[in-house]
Length: 367
Image 1 (tube, rainbow, N blue to C red):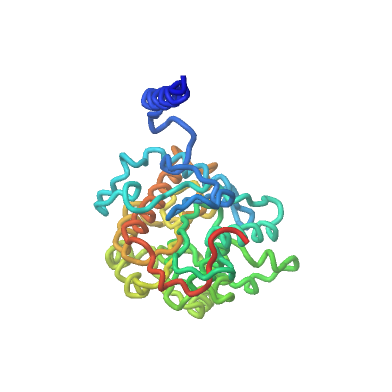
Image 2 (image 1 turned 90 degrees about the vertical axis):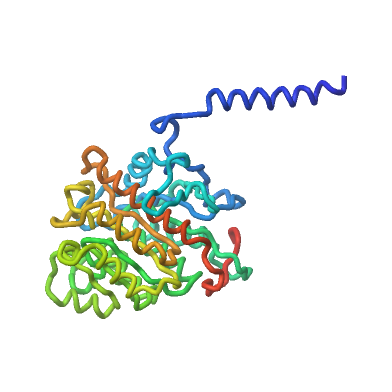
């Protein structure tokens, strides 16, 4: 009689295994959408889960200057990533599968962000990334925190991520793929209604990062083709330590030239952040965005450059400004998902971050 409970357990386990084999396999278009069918972990809540790279959505778009809608970007990029999964994740350009390697990669879901109060929203994002990156002063450890790839959201979501990274690594290099400079000084655009909150938007967040001492002198814009107020915009940009690579350099000098310029500027063994505004691509390949600029890059050119710079020490990244309401046939979101995959591949292929790069105290878990 004492064997009955044990037999019941064995039978239950066997039955569960049979059910998993029978019903556990889904096609790519089935099931609940996480990025590339990754495990969903509520990273801000479940602090016991250990992982190496987290995909995290930041559905915030109330700091835009033109068309809104990027708050729906994280969901669109996740939907567009459904043809990625571990059995079909081999990146032939890198000869590597980031989903079947040393790293545990998870989908952290979204940061809950207020859509009605920008001051509150930035407080939420600041605190979220500090907690995600174990920022604090309670315990000093030599283990680096996990890395994150943001799915935006408008481009201002970069700032809270960079602030938290600064508290772990100190100032970081930024490789910024964008049609626009995003180093606009707010005082160049005077307004009666200007406030401290309105100064931080998707066109000024890199200026704010510079003002707060979050960046190094080794920063690169790539794909720039925006209209300017005057050449004074470039002077301001120069003062903030940026190298500009114009969009035209792709066809005048080639994508290898662009990659070489980035690698000359950014030391490969120093903490680096990659930021991709999807409007770096030509509107023919990225209509689903808020501020399109004609004459942009092809997806294959951007992907080639990302592959060429994959030896950089990437401590964080973002893919932003995907606004699916303006998209057609999910082209923009699909390109966003591919870009996130390329950055993830580079992160995992490079290996773990050297703990010697950690400059500040970090803690594991919440205060």
